[in-house]
Image (cartoon, rainbow, N blue to C red):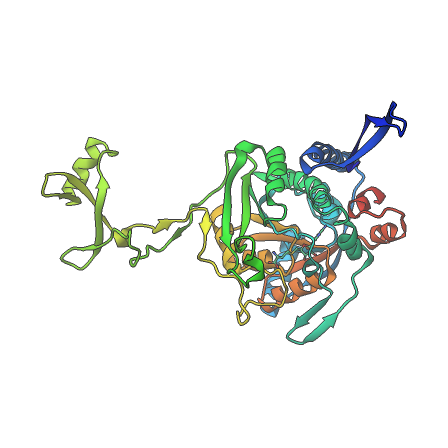
Length: 445
Ligand SMILES: C[S@@+](CC[C@H](N)C(=O)[O-])C[C@H]1O[C@@H](n2cnc3c(N)ncnc32)[C@H](O)[C@@H]1O
């Protein structure tokens, strides 16, 4: 990809003796991101198409199972019985170590011989929190309650850090585009995707997502208050950056969505539940009745749910204990970041609070639906999915991240799950090869 544009221009020069001459000179200018976007999209599409073609030609990336993790004796006993009875066809949650481009390729292809059907169109919810150019996202040192583990990043991880970010935002967009295309392929027709992003790349990622998922399938930009204004330096020439964005898209209009509510805040100055009936029940009486049919109004009348104001206006009585609460909008300022002493804290720098994922997962999936996170980090998505009874697949390119996830789920007494990885042979081929970009591992394979 050419990052500069070159233009030849004629320049008029005046010699010392006063005569004129013209010279052709080449001017170089750095292309703007907007100028580069069409190429990023074109290349990203091609890369995704190549992968999908390879799958249809039967050229497959296989996942190898390293371990069947059995966190609790109780559940695993039950599990082995189930496996025998069901001839290993039961669903098993999966933690996968490897570059998600390959992981998704393998999931799309499936591995029938090993009882793993293709996951194309089978994932109901994807949440991702892809890192942006920050060393914190590729930790090599992790602290577990049992001690500290230090690990040099693997060759792949080093590429992931040094090479993925070579051209800053451009590299990031090139990295994310084909991955988002594969995620769309994995989504079911009722499926949703949530992409957690911040000010660095958010606005560009929105444009890419419109292209991949369709502008009509953009549902919300959730603005999460992820911090507090800190220090004079951060605010000397701009406002403190205290929010992240989460872009919410669906695959189709047939999405699954269960509106989340929060309890009504009785101390809110706009609270309307300020009246009490003779039994002490709080109610509001401000709804205009204009929206209801005559039949409904008569029903309310029979139930004693209509209040007549002094001026003779009718108002509907709604009891606090009968309403679901306040529907949650796209501004989420009620979920705190993980603080120093939080119980769920794992010392993983970019760990997101479980409450945030819980809200997303409760709204956009129901029990037994399949959820996935291909930039899993400390495994918050897996941990929440386990608690909420969803089936899950999580993947990360970092070995330390996978170790944290494995331990987190064991500590949580999760149901048995598979710890898999992109085949070692394929990784070795990549390390030996001259390809130096993380996405190229797919081509080597
Ligand atoms: C910001 S963290 C995710 C944090 C996570 N949401 C949590 O709550 O812990 C991003 C993760 O993406 C992983 N990652 C980056 N590039 C990847 C790739 N190509 N394939 C798989 N994982 C990748 C990093 O190793 C890192 O752990």
